[in-house]
Length: 141
Image 1: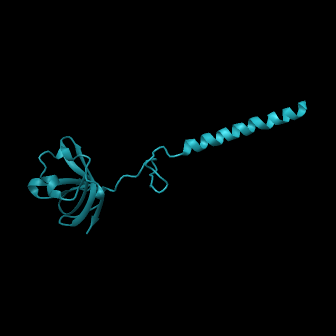
Image 2: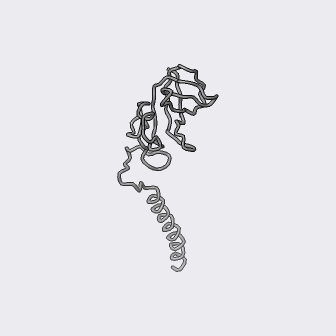
Image 3: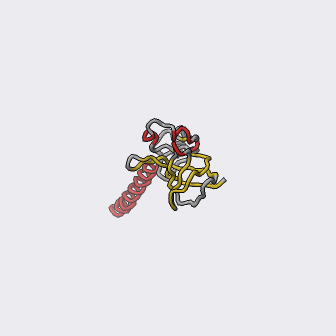
């Protein structure tokens, strides 16, 4: 009888440890956000994906809104989606859009030419008191 109780105890502890590990693993991987269900898309960062820039209320679609802002620094971080004509080239990585008295600098690695109509998507950024657009894409139209 002593032998049988030893055999039972040899199997009970590993079985209990395995079940405990299984329970802990299932709790660890369970969604923590109650608003996230199986049909809710979740990004690779582990949270619900944000809206696209075009759907965001912080997206500018009109260059005049940006160029005419009393304090363009209030627009820092906003997204832009503009269909505009290139006013002038500054250098190989930047160009101007808008009218001469209210033009906006665009920084982009995409080559463009003056008077070309383009679609610009990007973000309003600032450096040394100057506000500019860092383009994520510039597409000729």
